[in-house]
Structure formats: structure tokens, C-alpha cells
Image (cartoon, rainbow, N blue to C red; front, top):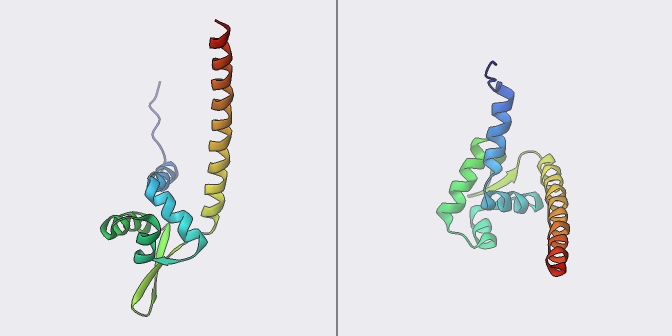
Length: 116
């Protein structure tokens, strides 16, 4: 059986999702979907150190997920594509469905253990 190699499109998709695969980056995106913000504003909202916020923004910038916008002497960040909000919303629905299924299973396990 021949080994399957991912095409460029699949690699691009995987790299995009890898860029999203960090809790702090997800939270940054949620904040930026509300409104563009500076590193300092993100720091305050996240309770994170400036180097950490800047590092996470750099990863999102490298994948063209966020873009910097110069406002006077301040650099503000914005989500490049508003459809990202839809993607995060769909992911939230999937997670809720998964958790609902897990809760049902846990309730069934609890009932089963009480019967014993």
C-alpha cells in the first residue's frame, strides 16, 4: 500500500490550526475579535508579561492571522479575517456537543455504579 503524503493545501491548513493551538493565542484572538488592541492592552486583559504576549502575536502574525496597524506611536493589532470569529464559534459548538456527550456518559456511569 502506497504511503500518502499531504498536499500543500493540507500542510497550509495544518500550519494554520497549529498557530491557533495555544490557549493564550485563542484568548488573544477572542479579544481582537471584539476590537483591535495594543500589546499593552492585551497584557492587561490577559494578565501576561509583555514578552509572552509579543511572542504569541508574532506567531499569529507569521501565519497572517493578525496584522499590526500603526496609530501614531502605538501599534494596534487586529484580526485579518473576521470569519475567524465564525470558526471559533463553530469550534465552541463542537466542544459543547462533546462535553454534553461526556456529561451524559458520566451520569450513566454514576447510575450504573449506584446499582451495584
